[in-house]
Image (cartoon, rainbow, N blue to C red; front, side, top):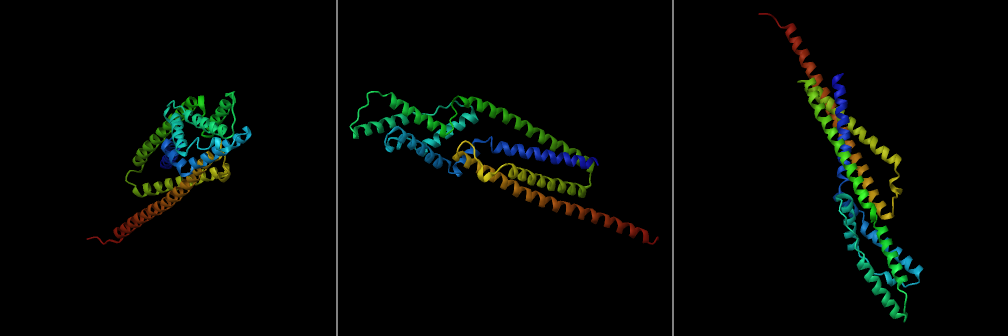
Length: 286
């Protein structure tokens, strides 16, 4: 009975460690997020969204569409996205550079005024338009302004908590394995069978986690903040579910194989003992 309890604790340790390490290597990894952003074609999509919004604001202001043409580039979006993520993950205080946007708007407006023989004495309206465009840009790339320090603090607190949970999971695994081998001694067939049970149960847990994600989250229609960010999160969720499914199948299959091997070794051992006893029983004395 004790051995089964230790085996159960071993499974718990593996589940805790796997989940916490997965979170550490995905959500809390800036490199991972950057790779998924690039894979989801985030920069191109956010570029198109921003330009569409710029055009709408320009039309509402009575200006021509070319006033906001070429004021941002995909490369700038990439650079600014990296700066924002650095603020969240590294605690930096990067400020999004917007003077080039203002400068380009000024040039485009001057060109518009010259072509239409217009002269604006009050420049405040132009300044308000520029501020509106820049604010729209920051909102679209999720700059968050003064909230970045608060987000970084929450990120660090959550990461430290997950690291502690990982440590607890590893301690449970090490202690469980140590006690398990002491209790089993040289009963290798039992060790193989219990290892198979642990692997199969871990595979089942992965299937359950996958099912819970599918039940509680409509991945195909998932939406958060804007379309571009939603596409990145959809990709992460889809890959997570796919990974859980593949690893669950592998662990479950490996568990079944180990259980079969363990039982076969056990039955073979019992058969050899029985044959030995029979030989001794019918062995003629000298």
